[in-house]
Length: 79
Image 1 (cartoon, rainbow, N blue to C red):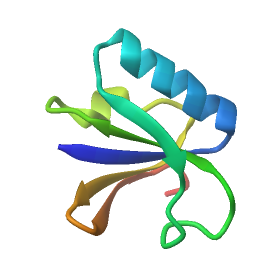
Image 2 (tube, rainbow, N blue to C red):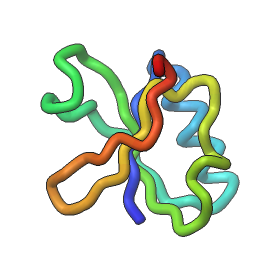
Image 3 (cartoon, rainbow, N blue to C red):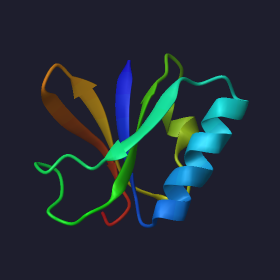
Image 4 (cartoon, one colour):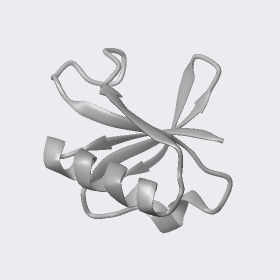
């Protein structure tokens, strides 16, 4: 499955990307898609087949599952 994680800070995105690499999770940093946020920011797109809830850290602001061109919100730290 494909996911997109948005972060409170750019350093949080970098930390998540490095931790994913250590765990053997394929990921790539990218700009946050405009339809998800009007502010500039860095997101991490990653591919994971396990329980994605085990990857949520305090650095993640929102987590989306990517299905085609749609983003389904799975987690929002503010709610």
